[in-house]
Image 1: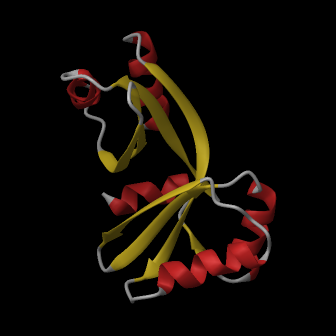
Image 2: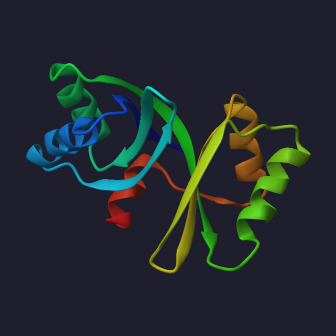
Length: 142
């Protein structure tokens, strides 16, 4: 019920981001969704991609600080308020969201998020009939 996400730690200086992107390009790894959270000295570049295990290996071998974790990805109708309704379900069950990012694709909204209450979140997704995107479904997004 989850997808793999890379978290890449990059310095806030010219060329750091492009180095990571070039490494992934050279290996023909397609980016599906990305976001960057920054601080003064570094950023966390979060990536959902076509081949997360390969991307992880390529970046590690190049000396890039990277981690791989599981996140939830749910598909929503592209209508105002759908994200609010979904997140309200989690909040109502006491499930906190550590971070979230979203995008629209093929007429659907996709919410990607991480929580410290993964089992509880998975149960809520199932019990409320939310459409979870799984790793095997990612190729459908490309």
